[in-house]
View 1 (cartoon, helix red, strand yellow):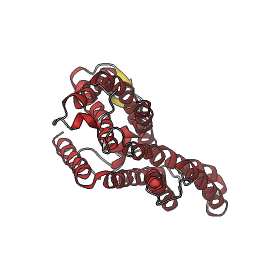
View 2 (cartoon, helix red, strand yellow):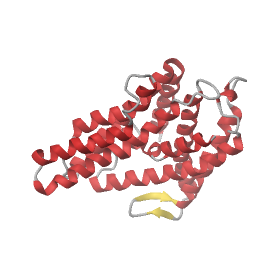
View 3 (cartoon, helix red, strand yellow):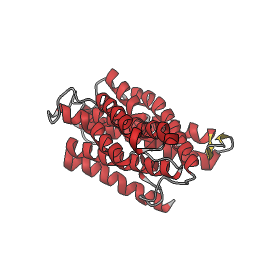
View 4 (cartoon, one colour):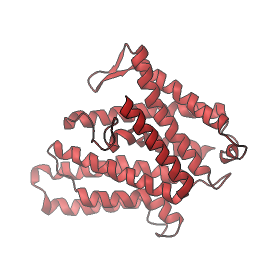
Amino acid sequence: MTQRTISTIILWTLVLGCVRWLGAPGSVWLVTVVSALTQHEFYQMLRRMGLVPFNRLGLFLGALITLAPWAAANHWLPAAITPELLLGLAVAAFSVRILGEREPQNRVETLAWTMFGLIYIPFMLQFLVRIILFSSPHPRTGLVMTIWLIAVAKGCDMGALLAGKAFGRHHMAPNISPKKTWEGAVGGVIFSALVGAAIVHGLPGNSYPAHFPTAFTPWVAACIALPIAGLTIVSDLVESVIKRRAGAKDSGTTIPGIGGMFDLSDSLILAAPAGYLLFSLL
Protein backbone atom coordinates (compact mmCIF):
# COMPACT_ATOMS: atom_id res chain seq x y z
CA MET A 1 0.00 0.00 0.00
CA THR A 2 2.89 2.35 0.78
CA GLN A 3 4.48 1.77 -2.63
CA ARG A 4 1.13 2.36 -4.32
CA THR A 5 0.65 5.64 -2.44
CA ILE A 6 4.14 6.89 -3.29
CA SER A 7 3.72 5.92 -6.95
CA THR A 8 0.35 7.67 -7.08
CA ILE A 9 1.81 10.88 -5.66
CA ILE A 10 4.72 10.79 -8.12
CA LEU A 11 2.41 10.13 -11.07
CA TRP A 12 0.05 12.98 -10.17
CA THR A 13 3.05 15.27 -9.77
CA LEU A 14 4.21 14.33 -13.27
CA VAL A 15 0.76 14.81 -14.77
CA LEU A 16 0.14 18.19 -13.12
CA GLY A 17 3.70 19.33 -13.88
CA CYS A 18 3.26 18.36 -17.52
CA VAL A 19 0.00 20.31 -17.73
CA ARG A 20 1.47 23.32 -15.92
CA TRP A 21 4.78 23.61 -17.76
CA LEU A 22 4.24 21.90 -21.11
CA GLY A 23 0.57 22.72 -21.69
CA ALA A 24 -1.56 21.02 -24.32
CA PRO A 25 1.31 19.76 -26.56
CA GLY A 26 3.07 18.08 -23.64
CA SER A 27 -0.20 16.60 -22.39
CA VAL A 28 -0.95 15.16 -25.83
CA TRP A 29 2.47 13.52 -26.00
CA LEU A 30 2.00 12.17 -22.46
CA VAL A 31 -1.29 10.56 -23.49
CA THR A 32 0.45 9.11 -26.56
CA VAL A 33 3.27 7.60 -24.48
CA VAL A 34 0.79 6.09 -22.00
CA SER A 35 -1.25 4.71 -24.90
CA ALA A 36 1.80 3.18 -26.61
CA LEU A 37 3.10 1.56 -23.41
CA THR A 38 -0.37 0.19 -22.62
CA GLN A 39 -0.72 -1.22 -26.13
CA HIS A 40 2.76 -2.76 -25.91
CA GLU A 41 1.86 -4.52 -22.65
CA PHE A 42 -1.38 -5.74 -24.22
CA TYR A 43 0.52 -7.28 -27.14
CA GLN A 44 3.00 -8.86 -24.71
CA MET A 45 0.10 -10.53 -22.92
CA LEU A 46 -1.19 -11.79 -26.26
CA ARG A 47 2.17 -13.49 -26.80
CA ARG A 48 1.77 -15.19 -23.44
CA MET A 49 -1.52 -16.56 -24.78
CA GLY A 50 0.35 -18.08 -27.73
CA LEU A 51 -0.78 -15.41 -30.19
CA VAL A 52 1.53 -13.46 -32.51
CA PRO A 53 0.22 -9.91 -33.11
CA PHE A 54 1.88 -7.44 -35.48
CA ASN A 55 3.58 -5.60 -32.66
CA ARG A 56 5.75 -2.95 -34.38
CA LEU A 57 3.27 -1.91 -37.06
CA GLY A 58 0.47 -2.00 -34.51
CA LEU A 59 2.36 0.32 -32.15
CA PHE A 60 3.27 2.71 -34.98
CA LEU A 61 -0.34 2.94 -36.15
CA GLY A 62 -1.51 3.20 -32.55
CA ALA A 63 0.69 6.25 -31.96
CA LEU A 64 -0.65 7.87 -35.15
CA ILE A 65 -4.23 7.18 -34.10
CA THR A 66 -3.66 8.78 -30.70
CA LEU A 67 -1.95 11.85 -32.19
CA ALA A 68 -4.24 12.25 -35.21
CA PRO A 69 -6.79 14.70 -33.68
CA TRP A 70 -4.02 17.00 -32.40
CA ALA A 71 -1.98 16.72 -35.61
CA ALA A 72 -5.00 17.56 -37.78
CA ALA A 73 -5.98 20.51 -35.55
CA ASN A 74 -2.45 21.92 -35.85
CA HIS A 75 -2.23 21.20 -39.60
CA TRP A 76 0.55 18.63 -39.21
CA LEU A 77 -1.67 16.15 -41.04
CA PRO A 78 -4.48 16.68 -43.56
CA ALA A 79 -7.88 16.85 -41.88
CA ALA A 80 -8.87 13.71 -43.79
CA ILE A 81 -6.34 11.64 -41.79
CA THR A 82 -8.68 10.76 -38.96
CA PRO A 83 -8.38 7.94 -36.39
CA GLU A 84 -11.20 6.16 -38.21
CA LEU A 85 -9.32 6.30 -41.53
CA LEU A 86 -6.15 5.02 -39.86
CA LEU A 87 -8.11 2.08 -38.46
CA GLY A 88 -9.29 1.28 -41.99
CA LEU A 89 -5.72 1.45 -43.30
CA ALA A 90 -4.63 -0.81 -40.45
CA VAL A 91 -7.20 -3.44 -41.44
CA ALA A 92 -5.87 -3.32 -45.01
CA ALA A 93 -2.21 -3.52 -43.95
CA PHE A 94 -2.73 -6.40 -41.50
CA SER A 95 -4.92 -8.27 -44.00
CA VAL A 96 -2.10 -8.18 -46.55
CA ARG A 97 0.51 -9.28 -44.01
CA ILE A 98 -1.38 -12.27 -42.60
CA LEU A 99 -1.41 -13.91 -46.04
CA GLY A 100 2.34 -14.43 -46.04
CA GLU A 101 3.57 -13.97 -42.46
CA ARG A 102 1.35 -16.21 -40.33
CA GLU A 103 0.43 -19.88 -40.34
CA PRO A 104 -3.07 -20.78 -41.61
CA GLN A 105 -4.23 -21.82 -38.15
CA ASN A 106 -3.60 -18.41 -36.55
CA ARG A 107 -4.21 -15.88 -39.32
CA VAL A 108 -7.70 -14.95 -38.16
CA GLU A 109 -6.60 -14.65 -34.53
CA THR A 110 -3.63 -12.48 -35.50
CA LEU A 111 -5.81 -10.07 -37.47
CA ALA A 112 -8.56 -9.97 -34.83
CA TRP A 113 -6.37 -9.49 -31.77
CA THR A 114 -3.99 -6.99 -33.39
CA MET A 115 -6.95 -4.87 -34.46
CA PHE A 116 -8.62 -5.21 -31.08
CA GLY A 117 -5.44 -3.82 -29.50
CA LEU A 118 -5.65 -0.78 -31.79
CA ILE A 119 -9.34 -0.18 -31.18
CA TYR A 120 -9.46 -0.86 -27.45
CA ILE A 121 -6.40 1.18 -26.47
CA PRO A 122 -5.16 3.99 -28.79
CA PHE A 123 -8.50 4.59 -30.51
CA MET A 124 -10.29 4.87 -27.17
CA LEU A 125 -7.55 6.96 -25.52
CA GLN A 126 -7.42 9.41 -28.44
CA PHE A 127 -10.65 10.80 -27.02
CA LEU A 128 -8.50 12.24 -24.23
CA VAL A 129 -6.64 14.16 -26.93
CA ARG A 130 -9.96 15.37 -28.32
CA ILE A 131 -10.91 16.62 -24.85
CA ILE A 132 -7.57 18.43 -24.54
CA LEU A 133 -8.48 20.31 -27.72
CA PHE A 134 -11.56 21.89 -26.09
CA SER A 135 -10.98 25.65 -25.95
CA SER A 136 -14.29 27.11 -24.73
CA PRO A 137 -14.88 29.02 -22.51
CA HIS A 138 -11.12 29.21 -21.84
CA PRO A 139 -8.07 28.13 -23.88
CA ARG A 140 -7.11 25.69 -21.09
CA THR A 141 -10.62 24.25 -20.65
CA GLY A 142 -9.62 21.01 -22.35
CA LEU A 143 -6.66 20.49 -20.03
CA VAL A 144 -8.75 21.15 -16.92
CA MET A 145 -11.53 18.84 -18.13
CA THR A 146 -8.99 16.11 -18.85
CA ILE A 147 -7.56 16.40 -15.34
CA TRP A 148 -11.11 16.29 -13.97
CA LEU A 149 -11.85 13.10 -15.93
CA ILE A 150 -8.64 11.40 -14.78
CA ALA A 151 -9.30 12.38 -11.16
CA VAL A 152 -12.84 11.01 -11.30
CA ALA A 153 -11.72 7.74 -12.90
CA LYS A 154 -8.81 7.18 -10.52
CA GLY A 155 -10.99 8.35 -7.62
CA CYS A 156 -13.30 5.44 -8.34
CA ASP A 157 -10.33 3.06 -8.11
CA MET A 158 -9.31 4.54 -4.76
CA GLY A 159 -12.83 4.68 -3.35
CA ALA A 160 -13.55 1.11 -4.41
CA LEU A 161 -10.33 -0.11 -2.81
CA LEU A 162 -11.01 1.61 0.52
CA ALA A 163 -14.72 0.77 0.63
CA GLY A 164 -14.04 -2.81 -0.38
CA LYS A 165 -11.51 -3.28 2.40
CA ALA A 166 -13.84 -1.73 4.97
CA PHE A 167 -17.24 -3.06 3.95
CA GLY A 168 -16.73 -5.61 1.18
CA ARG A 169 -18.89 -8.71 1.66
CA HIS A 170 -20.55 -9.58 -1.64
CA HIS A 171 -18.26 -10.48 -4.52
CA MET A 172 -19.02 -8.78 -7.81
CA ALA A 173 -17.27 -11.10 -10.29
CA PRO A 174 -15.47 -13.88 -8.41
CA ASN A 175 -14.46 -15.69 -11.60
CA ILE A 176 -12.86 -12.54 -13.02
CA SER A 177 -11.55 -10.49 -10.08
CA PRO A 178 -12.11 -12.22 -6.73
CA LYS A 179 -11.29 -9.17 -4.59
CA LYS A 180 -13.89 -6.84 -6.12
CA THR A 181 -17.13 -6.45 -4.19
CA TRP A 182 -20.41 -4.68 -4.77
CA GLU A 183 -19.83 -2.62 -1.65
CA GLY A 184 -16.48 -1.50 -3.03
CA ALA A 185 -18.07 -0.60 -6.37
CA VAL A 186 -20.75 1.51 -4.71
CA GLY A 187 -18.13 3.22 -2.56
CA GLY A 188 -16.01 3.92 -5.64
CA VAL A 189 -18.91 5.47 -7.56
CA ILE A 190 -19.92 7.67 -4.62
CA PHE A 191 -16.33 8.77 -4.05
CA SER A 192 -15.98 9.65 -7.75
CA ALA A 193 -19.09 11.84 -7.59
CA LEU A 194 -17.70 13.62 -4.53
CA VAL A 195 -14.32 14.13 -6.22
CA GLY A 196 -15.96 15.46 -9.39
CA ALA A 197 -18.11 17.94 -7.48
CA ALA A 198 -15.29 19.00 -5.16
CA ILE A 199 -12.92 19.83 -8.01
CA VAL A 200 -15.46 22.08 -9.71
CA HIS A 201 -16.48 23.72 -6.44
CA GLY A 202 -13.14 24.07 -4.75
CA LEU A 203 -10.36 24.75 -7.24
CA PRO A 204 -8.19 27.51 -5.74
CA GLY A 205 -8.11 30.97 -7.28
CA ASN A 206 -10.90 33.01 -8.83
CA SER A 207 -9.64 32.33 -12.36
CA TYR A 208 -9.95 28.55 -12.23
CA PRO A 209 -13.76 28.17 -12.23
CA ALA A 210 -13.82 30.07 -15.54
CA HIS A 211 -12.01 27.12 -17.12
CA PHE A 212 -15.15 25.00 -16.84
CA PRO A 213 -18.23 25.45 -19.05
CA THR A 214 -20.93 27.52 -17.37
CA ALA A 215 -23.29 24.54 -17.24
CA PHE A 216 -20.67 22.41 -15.49
CA THR A 217 -21.83 23.09 -11.92
CA PRO A 218 -20.80 20.88 -8.98
CA TRP A 219 -24.15 19.08 -9.15
CA VAL A 220 -23.78 18.44 -12.87
CA ALA A 221 -20.19 17.31 -12.32
CA ALA A 222 -21.34 14.82 -9.68
CA CYS A 223 -24.04 13.43 -12.00
CA ILE A 224 -21.63 13.09 -14.92
CA ALA A 225 -19.11 11.38 -12.65
CA LEU A 226 -21.57 8.54 -11.91
CA PRO A 227 -21.63 6.86 -15.38
CA ILE A 228 -17.93 7.55 -15.85
CA ALA A 229 -17.16 5.80 -12.56
CA GLY A 230 -19.34 2.86 -13.56
CA LEU A 231 -17.41 2.51 -16.81
CA THR A 232 -14.07 2.60 -14.98
CA ILE A 233 -15.20 -0.47 -13.04
CA VAL A 234 -16.12 -2.23 -16.29
CA SER A 235 -12.73 -1.22 -17.77
CA ASP A 236 -10.94 -2.74 -14.80
CA LEU A 237 -12.90 -5.98 -15.12
CA VAL A 238 -12.13 -6.21 -18.85
CA GLU A 239 -8.41 -5.88 -18.10
CA SER A 240 -8.79 -8.59 -15.45
CA VAL A 241 -10.35 -10.87 -18.08
CA ILE A 242 -7.37 -10.30 -20.37
CA LYS A 243 -4.81 -10.80 -17.58
CA ARG A 244 -6.55 -13.98 -16.40
CA ARG A 245 -6.50 -15.34 -19.97
CA ALA A 246 -2.77 -14.53 -20.17
CA GLY A 247 -2.07 -16.02 -16.74
CA ALA A 248 -0.69 -12.71 -15.43
CA LYS A 249 -1.33 -10.99 -12.09
CA ASP A 250 -0.25 -7.60 -13.42
CA SER A 251 0.27 -6.35 -16.95
CA GLY A 252 3.88 -5.43 -16.12
CA THR A 253 6.24 -4.10 -13.46
CA THR A 254 6.71 -0.54 -14.68
CA ILE A 255 5.11 1.19 -11.68
CA PRO A 256 5.92 -0.04 -8.13
CA GLY A 257 2.83 -0.89 -6.13
CA ILE A 258 0.54 -0.58 -9.15
CA GLY A 259 1.94 -2.90 -11.81
CA GLY A 260 2.21 -2.10 -15.49
CA MET A 261 1.01 0.83 -17.55
CA PHE A 262 -2.13 -1.13 -18.49
CA ASP A 263 -2.93 -1.46 -14.77
CA LEU A 264 -2.69 2.32 -14.52
CA SER A 265 -4.55 3.34 -17.67
CA ASP A 266 -7.26 0.66 -17.78
CA SER A 267 -9.82 2.80 -15.95
CA LEU A 268 -9.47 5.57 -18.57
CA ILE A 269 -10.09 3.41 -21.64
CA LEU A 270 -13.89 3.38 -21.46
CA ALA A 271 -14.09 6.65 -19.52
CA ALA A 272 -12.40 8.66 -22.28
CA PRO A 273 -15.07 8.38 -25.02
CA ALA A 274 -17.87 8.66 -22.45
CA GLY A 275 -16.29 11.81 -21.04
CA TYR A 276 -15.83 13.27 -24.51
CA LEU A 277 -19.50 12.69 -25.34
CA LEU A 278 -20.79 14.12 -22.06
CA PHE A 279 -18.46 17.15 -22.20
CA SER A 280 -19.50 17.81 -25.80
CA LEU A 281 -23.13 18.07 -24.69
CA LEU A 282 -22.13 20.94 -22.40
